[in-house]
Amino acid sequence: MEKEQYILTGDHITKTYAMPDGSSFDALHDVSVAIPAGKLTILKGRSGSGKTTLMNILCGLDQPTAGKVLLGDREVTAMNDRERTAMRRSDIGFIFQSVALIPIMTAEENVEYALRLAGWKGDRAQRVKECLELVGLSKRMKHLPSEMSGGEQQRVAIARAIAHQPRMMFADEPTGELDTNTALQVVKIFKELNRTQGVSILMTTHDKGFMEIGDCVYSLENGVMKDA
Ligand SMILES: Nc1ncnc2c1ncn2[C@@H]1O[C@H](COP(=O)(O)OP(=O)(O)OP(=O)(O)O)[C@@H](O)[C@H]1O
Ligand SMILES: [Mg+2]
Image (cartoon, rainbow, N blue to C red; front, side, top):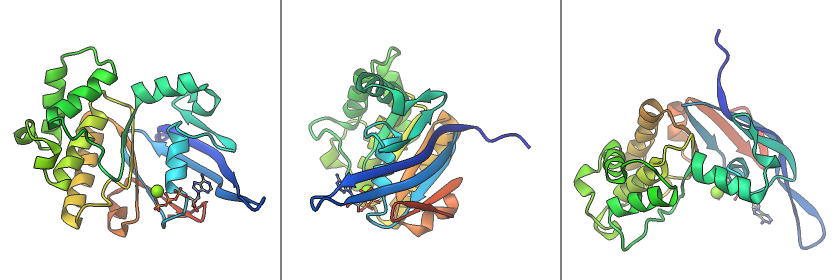
């Protein structure tokens, strides 16, 4: 059988916080993950289990106390701040639980702005149109966030996250504030992006309903990885 290709791996990651009373607390304890390329990976776990902590370490926003992170063959945990920032800008896209669109910009301006920040060299207007079409919003390009539903706003956020063609996209509870049908629609868009854009996606969720949609599922419990 062909060996599975991983885009991102976390090896033996521990994150320890010093507590005010002088004790220490492992938000993550010896956690290892391998994220398959071009697939949808789901990270589940209760509130406080360590999902956001792990995502932040995997994308280079935060440093682990021990362990290492590899994106392709580059060791993220060995990079300095400047290198990690550059890597995030070019190779990574983010979506957060509460949509953080710029309120005074229309859907297309929000996506265009992200492309500008990423230093996109190609035809920006064309790429904006393509991305909003990918998430089914070609009819909402001129709408402000306040003129769109929560699900539509989240889809603009998805278009914005993948516009610069990152290799890897992180989505922390992207469906947390959506109703079940809209949430399902968002997850289906993720699968479509895997297929058409080749982007690898890691999303966290509390929702047990999505487990079978994930190509790969990891489960955190009190900072320790369990069999999903
Ligand atoms: N800066 C910090 N100092 C001390 N403890 C922290 C810090 N940040 C997070 N924690 C603790 O680490 C644990 C994991 O937090 P994390 O935010 O990763 O959980 P989560 O799984 O994302 O939860 P949720 O589903 O609520 O978003 C929690 O117990 C939290 O209180
Ligand atoms: Mg969280």
